[in-house]
Image 1 (cartoon, rainbow, N blue to C red):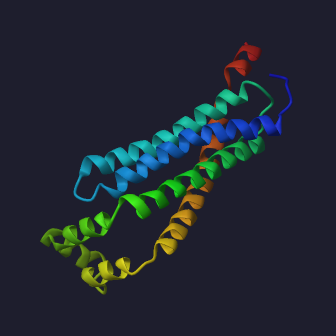
Image 2: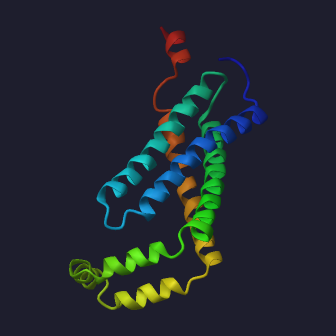
Image 3: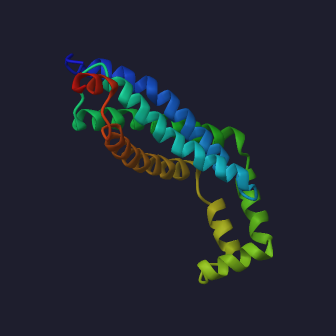
Length: 182
């Protein structure tokens, strides 16, 4: 526990953790993108997103047992993990939209907007925007613009998740600290 913080070791650990976090974020994205009309997929998407934060907190606490780990170091490690995960997730999103989707997302969205209950809901939420105009605008967006927007969203998500997990990872003492204080 008295061992100093090793930056290269922490960066390697963050990269390994990012594989798991990125996999959860990618699975959450896939559930979310395919959840139009499927409530359980939407729920699974949310559960996977929350699970990713829980996993990150557990990984930070596990690493904290090996060295002195201040809030700044916890945040730095969470930030690195989340940024690697964001890049991995964005790459997977690119693969999905480039090779797998084939217009299914827009087709699902179009079919959903053709249902009367969704059209009524849309009119209450966005009365100035016609749903068919919104769909045609989305169809005109290039893959590069979509991926850039997703990358920015993933970076914002990474910032929020890293701060939240750094706070939560320090909210209770690690097992080593509990033994020392006993």
